[in-house]
Length: 412
Image (tube, rainbow, N blue to C red):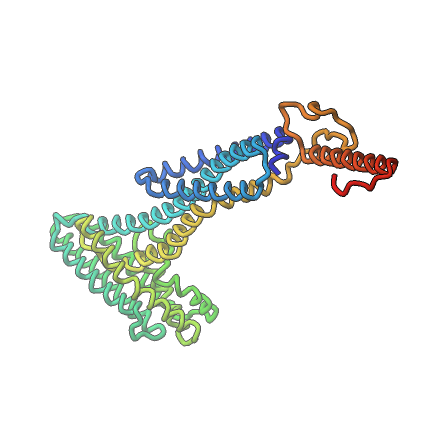
């Protein structure tokens, strides 16, 4: 194979130029991703990446050398150059895919951070008068905790059935809206601005009353219960941007539909899975909420819990597989790149160079130029000439022995 490399300089250069070009593009892209994600803060993974890549390329190179033991010195030098280029290509390819995987991790983490920041901004909005109105803030926070604990018990699988359960959840949340109105009344009596609190309370009561008054729900809506995992967990982010009102409405609607379809066995299993997921994530969630409260110095209202669960589930479903993918590319990308390149190189075989006619007689000392090693065909032709001369000498000796009346010699 590597004698062919000696006879295919143009094809080899063309092929390696393409490899180097792709390698350069991947290197620039990978470095850009690494730099944008702040990956250069740690050199542990790049070191491991380089180590795995170098080890894989070294093993591959040794296998090729063992597999082609008759390669000439020039062929082995060509092999070394090609192997070094392939190592560079494998390193940059692996770096690119690793950076791509880490970029996916960063994207998910940015998504989780966005959810957390949105919850924090809502808390700040609710408690922006905390220092001036400590009593109001404590009252509102306490009411939020009470209502949230009731809602959480319903989500955890409390004794609810049909519309009565949804109505109970709605009434608990409407109690929070009444708390807004009562607090606003107190602020107004003190001569302070309470328009924002009135507005939020009115929006809450309007949305809750709209849900409660909707007594007719189509049977076809039971199909929405298939999305039970989304109920109270995967809340649509676009409904969380302005305020908590759309989120509360969505929660109540989904719980209403969920409990209407609770009689179905499949839906019951889905409800149980939802409860299990909430139970498993509760400890992690409480730690995150405690950190958030400590960072913002603001009491956390617990009805943001399903939003936080969404972040946890996103982490479970996307971040862990992405890290596994990144680790796999660190190990297998170099070896895979080398294998593919060596396989593709077999299709770049040029036409054979001019050969010496095996039947052509070549004088001693002038059969090969000094700058070129003999090919296998030339060596075979030379061996055939030597064999033919030996056979001719043997036949000539036999004829001379017959002419002299002697027996032919038994050895040559």
